[in-house]
Length: 220
Image (tube, rainbow, N blue to C red):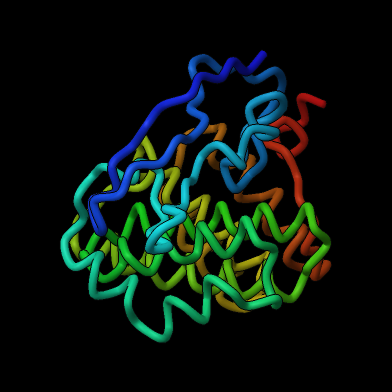
């Protein structure tokens, strides 16, 4: 069950106040997807994960949190175009705009996750081409995160699993397979090995569908 409450936030970009729904408590039952998306009911609350300032268009999980260079990005033509483009679902645009702000600040891990969240929205809206672009962007950002020593999963080995799934679902099969083979050479634990082997099978079949961790490990 997801509980909500209203909170007034002061935008760190323009200083204007606005009221937004915040998640008070959340829960998830079942297995997460291979790209980290939680099961219901948590996955059904995505529209509360991101906010948009009605005055300036600043997009963030917390509008009151200052992010370096955010004002400049929000005023840019690229940002404004992303906020309005019909090529993506409206909610996906908010996540992608947040991703632009975070990328500019050098917060590549969070920027990558914002792009992944946008991909999930596009999946639900059956905008496959847009979801693919979101994942392609996420891969670039997460690779930058790795280069700069920023963690984006709880365990280092899980980073490799996430990138493999993003590569597969964005149809970059050759690179996905290379990453799978590289991961297996590291002699991972049983859980990670089983997921990499499962991914390898999907890659060989050019399968871009969404699968859960439970499915990959044979638990369901």
